[in-house]
Image (cartoon, rainbow, N blue to C red; front, side, top):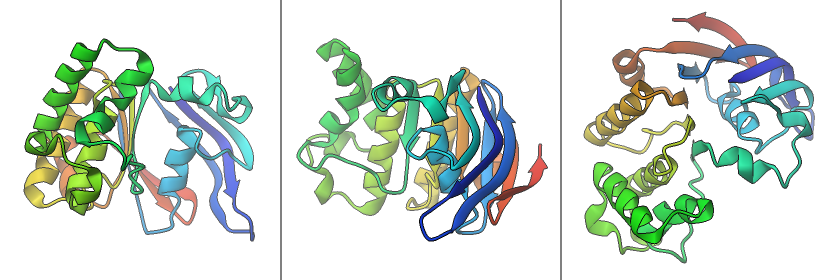
Length: 220
């Protein structure tokens, strides 16, 4: 489903976030990315989502060459990807439930079906009593849970998550990881960057360890 062949990502100024990375992630896999701050975890996720493009090498996702993907084609790629990034990209002119419904609205879902699915996932992340609230009024942890709800509402084939439990207390972190486990069990591919050893232990899967832009260790 995801392939990297000799992928390097170099930013202006010469900083090399990834260097000669080779990896393959199969459909339905659960993969954790670990490593120090600045190891390249976030960059790797952004390359998969076509938020960034590689400086050299080949990135492929679901059979599509990300290097050659036009900007017009990117939204179609992302329709099957749930994104949970540390900069939440929430819409502050819309309330909680409208933020969650956005992917369904874009995909053309019936309004009643969208509301039903949005309320179900908002309930699972513990925000049902805040569905009419503006995201600006939410705490950092609540914004994180809102971002996770929006990523999961369309039941994507691929979920990319960058430190999804970083701003959550232990109880909510466990609930979110249980949701991720449920999605994985029905075939969703998960790629999760995390420092949360408890989550890795609880969910299992495969771990790729990054060290200064290189995949230094692979464990199962």
